[in-house]
Image 1 (cartoon, one colour):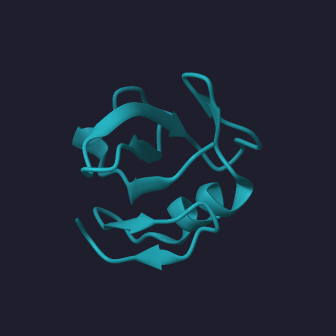
Image 2 (image 1 turned 180 degrees about the vertical axis):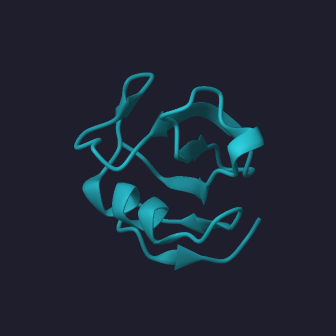
Image 3 (image 1 turned 45 degrees about the vertical axis):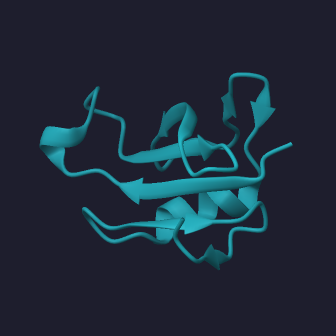
Amino acid sequence: MVEWCSVRKLRGFDRPTIDSVYEIQVLDEDGRAIGVGYLNDATIQLAIGDRQIPPQVISAARRCTLGDGQYVGPDGKVAPGF
């Protein structure tokens, strides 16, 4: 189960591949990334390690503006930073 995530829309120079538009990091209880995944506008499902990323978190990543990021809960709602 996904607890907290960091989501952001990547700038061109931050993208690991040309079609990686968004980044989702699964965070531990201290706010450290324990897994990272990349997606684009065509991505429907995403798993990071053994965690299935909820559609609400994918939608939250897509709402980010270029270079912007935020912390979200499993419901995709913005959460306070760590």
